[in-house]
Length: 368
Image 1: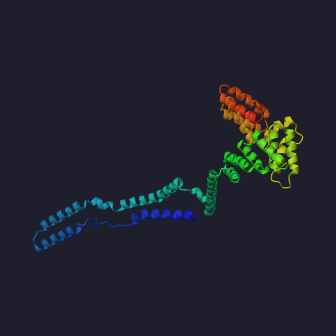
Image 2: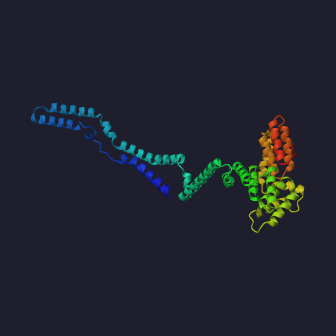
Image 3: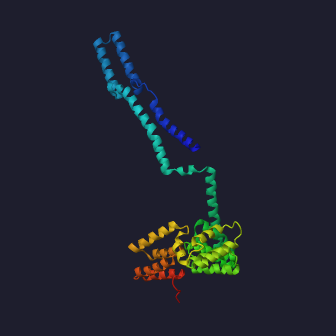
């Protein structure tokens, strides 16, 4: 609110700077308009004295005063019309200029502020703005310092482990994958470290538990059979592979072993509800898109329709296949693989991309 008061006062000052000169009334006379006025006035007075002394006849004196008056008008560049213009018309012009200044100046000021200013900053208190900016700068500075340190000491596993979750927070998922991979390499495998590494691999694949990620989770469970994160993603992998009975059993065991108030318990319950306690394998597969992902299912359907009618790149076909796998629709994923191979038959690199995706999701047997 204070900033708007300041802007209002600044606008009022600008308007007054324009209106003040226009509002001053000047009694414009011949004496004010030309410095020669005094000379011609004295000349006329001298002519009048000569007439009184008898030096000039009355007619001669009158003619001399008329000539002096003409010279006065010529020297000032004014006529009778000029003096008339200093009256009511000038007043009307001043009023018009005043109205224009009152309306145009504030409008121009607001337009310029909207175009080049930062009105959105007024939606947050200055203290919150300062704290948010300081937090962002501190985070960026810290990350830069860690990266500079790791560039000089690439075998510092602890540094990689510290920066990995920061990368996730910043949305740099691929960098987080590399950081966790380096942490595991230099610090050695541990249940939590492997579970975090596998989780970020899943994030990088848009929710798909790839074969590589599954192996990481299995290694974590081998080191600690109670690792909740690794057990959860192994259950998700079974669900995506179409092994719904195995997935339900794994979810149930994880839920039973979870302490009261465990943060992952609600997510596990939703997965179980999506599969259904009495649901058959076929029914589970049919209803898999209802696992709280209706919007995703509609987008996948739209992508499939577009690729079928207008075609698409290998990456788009791979995205469709991955989406079907994440939703648990393995039959559709396999059908999309076959359809992509047909459409991309003339594109050897594209076919290799589709085959690699299908092997990664265990839709086809791994080649030699």
